[in-house]
Amino acid sequence: MQGKSPKESYTIMNELVLPNDTNTLNNLMGGRLLHWMDIASAISAQKHCNRIVVTASVDNVSFKAPIKLGDVISIEAKVSRAFTTSVEVRMDVWAENIPSGTRVKSNEAYYTFVALDSDGNTVKVPELIPETPEEIILFDGALRRRQLRLILGGKMSPDDATELKALFFAAQQ
Image (cartoon, rainbow, N blue to C red; front, side, top):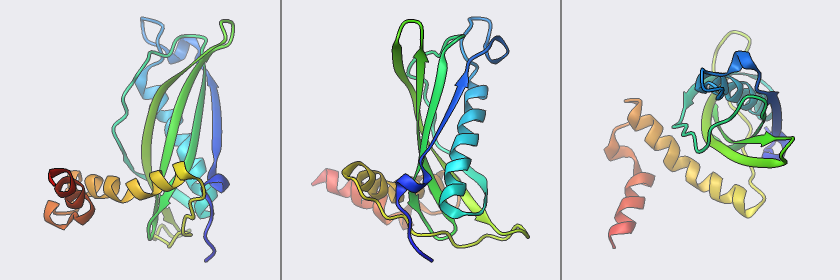
């Protein structure tokens, strides 16, 4: 199986925030944004895997700035690391007010997807080959993020999280 670069999974999804997408303060509802982020990141994961993918986890999503009625949302997604049968996808969310010309970064997040065959069984995914300095940093950090997700999900003992332990022990020295 041939490896792929992150740019091969790069996806941009745009949405216009309409009244049905907002709360009583005319801000985008968080659940609507999470829905759009899930779609954008799934498309990115499918581009990398050439398979059906299902969402395995969603990391912390923090809102840095409200997204207003009439803003255009741009969700930029690309695979940051591939594991055996799963991929981590990094997303940046931008809110743009076209009349004023302002563009603000609202969110960033990581979603994890598992690749499946037509019978619903997990399948191996292509290796990710990072090319730029930023892609290498995201790639290197992905193993720590994965270990943290597995610990929080009860699928890994903290004692087995060698990458995380190394991070904390290095900070003490």
